[in-house]
Image (cartoon, rainbow, N blue to C red; front, side, top):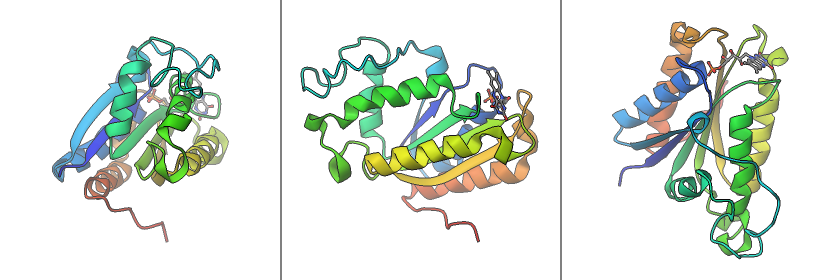
Length: 200
Ligand SMILES: Cc1cc2nc3c(=O)[nH]c(=O)nc-3n(C[C@H](O)[C@H](O)[C@H](O)COP(=O)(O)O)c2cc1C
C-alpha cells in the first residue's frame, strides 16, 4: 500500500525556502508512489496549548481547544511519515511550528498510549530548515535539530534526516541544486520505508 506522507510547512512567506525544500522531498516520494498531504500552519488558526490537561485526563479525544488543530490530529495519526519545514527564527523553529508541536501533547495522552505504542511511534520524520546566516553553527539550526532529536526520541518516531541550508531571500534555495537532489532522494527513501545512510 502507498505510504502516506504529511508535509507540515510553517513559513508565512511566499516562495518560502523551507517549504520549497519540503516540496522536493514530497516530489521524490510522489515519484515512488507515496500519497502526499500538505498543510501550511501559517495559514491556519492554531493557538497555544493551555496546559488544561483535559487531553491527559481523557476528557476529550484530542483537545478541548476548538481551533484548526483539531482537524490535523487524525492526519498526523494516519501518516506513515511527516516532513516538517521551518524557517529558523531566533535560533530555533518558527513560532508557527512550535505551537503545533506543543499541541501534539494531546497525542501523548494515556488513552492514546505512550512510548512504542504512541500514535507517533514508528513514523519517519524529516526536518527541512533554512536560515539566513552563512554559518549553520551560528544560525540556530542546531537548536531546531536538537529539539527534533528529543521530540522524536520521546514520541518514538524516527528522525531520518535533517535537510538544511543558508537561504536568506525568498526562493534562494532553488540555486542549491545539490541539496534539492538530496531532498528528492530522501523523499524516495521514505516513500519505500527506507532510511538514508548516515553521512560518511
Ligand atoms: C523573525 C525572523 C527571525 C529570523 N531569525 C534567524 C536566525 O535566528 N538565524 C538565521 O540564520 N536566520 C534567521 N532569519 C532568516 C530566515 O531564517 C531565512 O530567511 C529563512 O530562509 C526563511 O525561511 P522561509 O523562506 O522558508 O520563510 C530570521 C528571519 C525572520 C523573519
